[in-house]
Image (tube, rainbow, N blue to C red; front, side):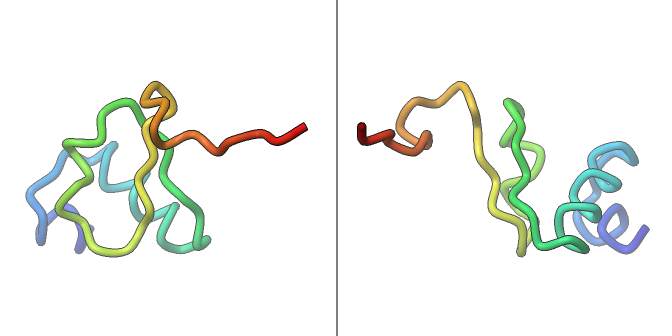
Length: 57
């Protein structure tokens, strides 16, 4: 709940962000704007090709 109060975000977004923070995982979402102000998790947009890792074969 601290994330929700501190950053004024919706409850579902706060739960998602808290889960990513607690487990040290990146947060993968198409809606990066809702998470850009939260310090901590790495936020990745799977639809942004500039953020996808390059596969070398």
